[in-house]
Image (cartoon, rainbow, N blue to C red; front, side, top):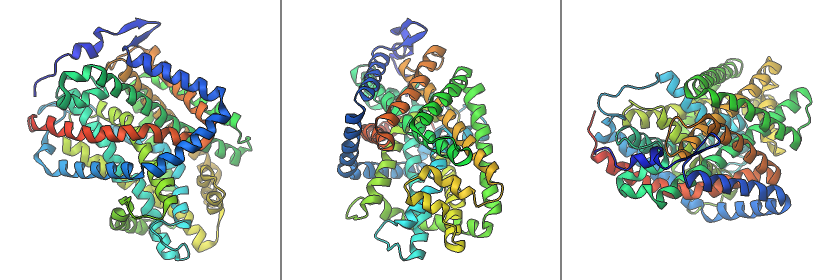
Length: 515
């Protein structure tokens, strides 16, 4: 397929330059003004906003659970089909393209941008909660069955489904940018099916929606990071775990993220991602070494088997009566991943030139799933082992008290060097916080500048600051429910767009040269 026409429009011919910003009209103007209005409205009517968030959350989870889960299943099947077709040999950037980054650097950025902060928050809390309240009608009194499902159910939420969502967006954008010569912005993914119409109102709407989804999806993660950091500081140092503390944390860590954003992709995001992944692997290795090592590795293998055996029932939205699990966990997670898909997909596309379709999709479906499974087993299974074998209930009590942000630190306190590892845990949450914020800022900056990769630094600073402001607004206007509702509301339309994106990918690959 030949290079697409009209790219000069997206690359900045019609952009407005003022106050150091590179305004792509109307994407920048509409998205920024809407977000400013949202922040002002929530802060002005905090009590009313909290009620609206509660009602909207209940309605979205109960009404559209089948949509979120159905689309997730379709995307997994689509990715599996790509792996076994000749399209897997298509190289992003053309037959002679070489990867811009080593496998280590690429995976570090992929993992840090994708899920790092979530694994820190849910790594202990989720398996423990699924053990106490098992899905699929399993009796909690049947501890063997509940234990078997606990980690498998947690892996389900961090396994092939979310990474299939990310892979579809990453592949569509990388192919559009490197094989068709289009700007790296979400509308470009639909060029194979819409042609030049992507430069009109429909394209504007797609990019504006991508900005909203990215901003609110990131705000959810930043809010969770603030919750966990505040809990850790209170647990270790007696710092009051209050709304003010969380606001100050978001503001302070956003300030740190600004430094990385100004440094750019190679000097800032890449180095932080590599350091963060190394630190996370060290903490993981420590827990595996001092915990019930043989049991954890045996459980890792067993839980992958349980995950494979239960992925069908867990993926089925029909005829279920485990609504707490279906709505409180799966529907929220799927919506959250959908809201993250434009951000993570675009970021991965940006660093994936030179890889084949099969390498990109295969790596995204396999490697992060294995790491997530190992993480859930190391942290969640260690907490359950302490509970079942030694009667150490600290982590379980935190989950029962609906304090998931504290579960990691309560689990670490029963291991050696608890003070050191808990500080490491706080540092990891903060650095994952920073890498998510700065990589998200780069993505939003690219979208609102019409696909430019070198938009002014002032614009990156603007969006990074607003990510923190939105997270603070949601924390003040409704707490965790507000964060979850923001992800649900923006994830729903993105889910529908991803189905259309599959058709666009298929049509585009049909005209591509095989590597």
